[in-house]
Image (tube, rainbow, N blue to C red):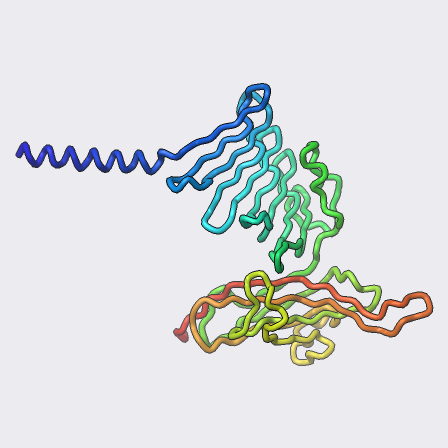
Length: 299
């Protein structure tokens, strides 16, 4: 009985030590000349950075920026000097932003969402939206959508208009294999409207798709979807829409599993030069990515 008791004690001690070691991370600190804490860096058991916190030069360790390192990216939070969140988003280890970054006012209201895509070796701002205090999307940013602190005053987009370009989904994220995945892109804020532009949608084929950063755009195989001027079948579903700026698109799948749709909306124009304007064409892209799950069961 005594041997069993000793064995239990030893096992509990090993478990306790193991748990302690899991949280015994190395910590590095740096300080301002004022002796206030400036940086706090936590390392994992492999001596790699796990968390990186930056603080304002205050005695109460007020956070300015927090970085939480994941396997493939960093999750980042910026703070106002009143401890409320300013901005939240993700970036890779090359400091390239991706996904939706959310910006807040000093009072804590959601003010803006910025959608980023990594394209090639860089990242781009794909779309942006401004909001009022009630959470409604604004066509144009107001005084409310400014960030009143010197550290963030310059973090203001050149464009103060929301991107009224919507990908409207007519299917759920999980579909059965006998159903198509249906989407429409509706462009209510065309940049090239003065040239009577149009849009089309280009989607990478399932077997020869765009890669994650769209760097294989010269070799990818594309499905092209035209706007309602040429798509007479779907035009009846959008009776009040400007046919130049609506495209219905989607995909049927032959196999079940996780699927990734990648592509872009292309706004473009082609024309003859005029006496006062020699421009003959132009284009811009709005990138698109969507994960879809296809079930092999038919209900």
